[in-house]
Image (tube, rainbow, N blue to C red; front, side, top):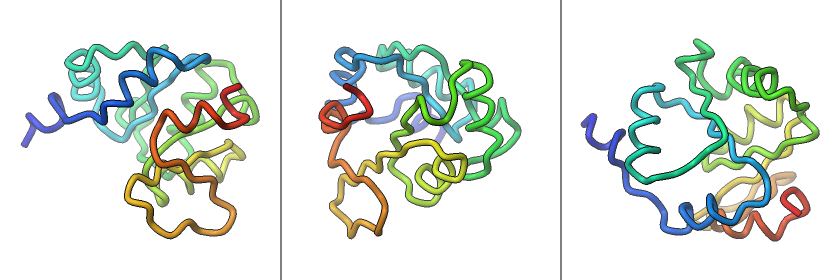
Length: 131
């Protein structure tokens, strides 16, 4: 089971997104720090920083993890966009602090009112948030 967390499959466009994204990428994850760092290393990704629920002692959608990331980076909610695949954890959590959110809707589920949706990470590059 632990192998899944430290050597997880990755969507191929994710690696390309890390290479071409014009702004720093911060990972905000409910996965424990050691596991996410191993996964990042396994896939050779280069985020600017990693923030975990273990660091914040709180899981998304609670605000503490998002606040930790904002406070540590010195960025305000209106300066960032949170991109995530969970409506309950990512969209609800980030939006509760006024953070712009893009929902990665890979399975093309029904999009709730007021939610901005993309099909994959590369589509985020065509939004006003990353231009």
